[in-house]
Image (cartoon, rainbow, N blue to C red; front, top):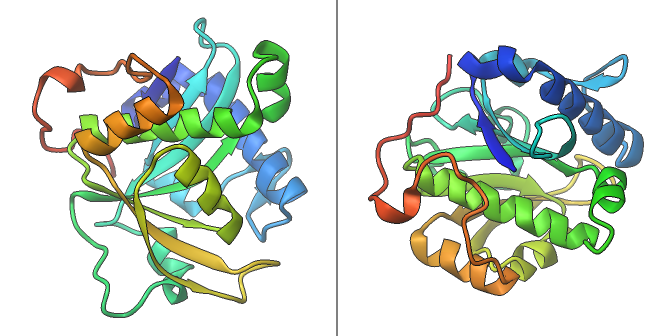
Length: 221
């Protein structure tokens, strides 16, 4: 199942969030060797203290984490402007209530392989990407911004996502870092479902298929 965990619900999902921070450490610090903030078994940074929202993919009993994404509004502090400002042109204004930043998207490949032996890691990533599109659409977000390494583009295309690469820059790690603006719309969501052969919504937070998008209800500090 896919959950959107907001600040007022953190106390209900402490174990899943704990697993998420541990997964982030294994993925971003241990495997990718990014220059991220590590404290013991966790990867957490100052943006996690700003009450972001987290999209969580977990087992139906909400005990086992399969993947997660952090969501933050661009009207507040973001990695996009604070860290990766060189990845997009000065002419781009990416601050608006309908534009949100998605960061720290990761999959627990070992746990997915154990519980879903027929699912490839790339499909797991694409499903989480589809759920992210559904969540954004359900909450009145029209654009998601993400920084990524160039090889990730093939996964986005495989999932049926539509995005514009606004720019890229070197100097952040082993590879260039790109900045992409991802369209959030019913058309794109339907396209992704068709590409991934998914007939029903993955995210069941609200019935976005039967109502027009509303103003965002994600809670921030």
